Amino acid sequence: MEQILGQIKETANYISNKCDVSPEIGVILGSGFSSIVDDIKEKTVIAFDEIPHFAHSTTRGHPGNLVLGKLSGKKVIVMQGRFHFYEGYTMWGIGLPIRVFKELGVKSIIITCSAGAINPNLKEGDIMVIKDHINLMPENPLVGPYTEELGPRFPNPKQAYSAKLQEILLAEAKKLSIKVKNGVYIAVSGPSYETAAEIEFMKKIGADAVGMSVVPEVLVANQAGIKTLAIAVISNSTKEVSEVTHEKVLANVSAVSDKISKLLQGTVKQIDEK
Image (cartoon, rainbow, N blue to C red; front, side):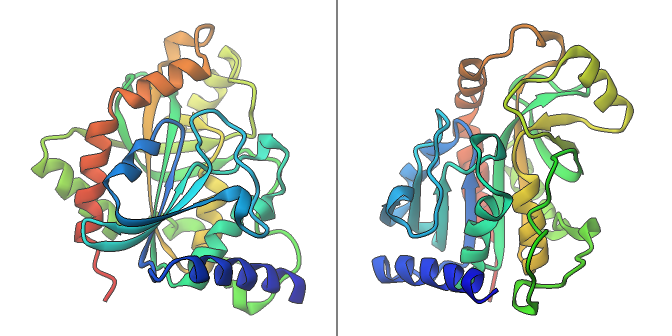
């Protein structure tokens, strides 16, 4: 257990020594979202490869940088890319950045992703606030050695998605005339996309959209006591099971990147951690 806590502290100390910013808000950028970092001021960029105990991002559309600076006047730490279970990483490694965010002082986190539509009312380019999730991943990032410093042993995920942060985002969306939907996200390990039969099953158990990330990060943030907002951009519809490709996912997210950037900046501006 001391080794695990040591990893968290060593990683946090490395980042602190690289940058004077004490971040209040964390952001994780999924496939195709990385251009948002262009709006960060006074930024320090650290490659994942340089950071002790961090994994390496191998998925196209994930540049693999940690960016610290100011966004909408708030001190932020941004993952320009993330780690996935399908890349062969442990759930502990996937959740480590969230633990490090907590160690650095982060109190709120915004998690973004692309997702495939399950609900036929969701279309390509739709923005969906994740209100709850269904976890079909084979492992849980909270399994393993435990100490109270990590948070409660048996955290309750019913409040994992902050209602307050959702209210802030929806208010900003209204100001910007950006339509935002909400729904249940179902997480799978990937990397295979879903079959038609799997999509039908997911629909029956209450899922609105499906993806290969988010939930491990949310579970760790919930245990750590970090308020969480999760946003998915619908990158493909239920009618395109045979046509979905990673290239198409990146293209569809890129098409709404300006809207997402404005929405995130407005939301970050309204988050008050004092």
